[in-house]
Length: 447
Image 1 (tube, helix red, strand yellow):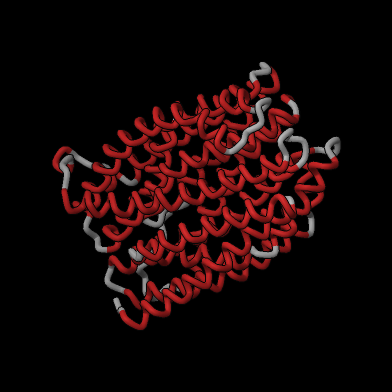
Image 2 (tube, helix red, strand yellow):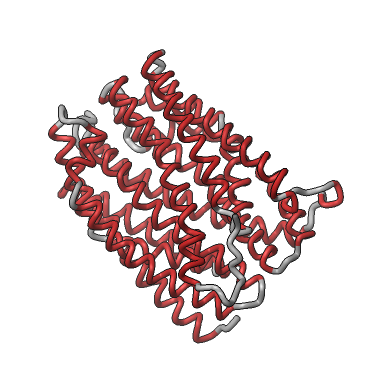
């Protein structure tokens, strides 16, 4: 089912919630890939493998979110074309996105395998964890074309307001991932390689299901022979949105990567801070999924309505989305803070009290800032959907730089508390910057 976001008689809040709910479920399910790997690895392969999985996951996301970000950028262009009811150009966009995206994902796969070891060393990965992290990443990076296919198809469905079916296919994939984890890691003792194979196989399943659904139910998204041409102006627009969105996603994870380096430097043996930070980050990822789903919903809503020439409704959607995300951010802060001990215990167990203590204190401090984080997500949706890519990128880069610099300054003095404070301060500065820029732009421009 797709949501008609251009219906001026419909409740904007209800439309945003209806659009965001499947996106949220999908984001949470996506996090279950990493969570399932981590839990099964910790239980069957030991603490060293668990710590290595945390480090490898951050490196993996650096490259995979290049693909995810690029697909998100393409979806904004598609949403605008769908809002304008320009289906011919929409199919041309589908062709160019599939062609150039597949080529890019193959090149990125090769490139990431070559850079894997230098990047792991750059972030001070302990020597005993390096081989384990490499085992995992080699398989993951080889499977990047499958990651692109799913993300591209899901992005196309999001662009037309159909967020529910991609989530159904993803849920099937997550179940497959968990079952394969238990089989390959638990039964066949394949360790990190088994975890990676389970993840790649699950991505292939979700991609195939998505393609079948689009061909049968959303065929207007499929390009025909007449659509298989390169529109230079459309290509430039697509490249701009895709590249900036990809750079935004990757810069966030470059920041995460460099922050991981600060954690590694205070815990060279990987016995407390690294597993504690890994556990906290896994839990944080579920919370981030809520904010990102809300931001994605705002993006699609704004893009479709601007494409339809209804700028006033687009602005109303952003304001309502911002309020809803702020309220949900307060709720998520409480959910992270109160049950922090049992939540971290799920990942590190009861046999590592030092790691448990580190994970709990990190989670509770960073939880205090999540209402601000969710406001940032709303602005992210507005900037991306309205095409304000300069603000979108400048704000992200500034936030990442501030976060990384503060983490390296505070971590040696305050441990993971310093890392959490660096993250929260970065979010706060970004929220202030984007609020100022939004007010200034609204005074000068009108859609």
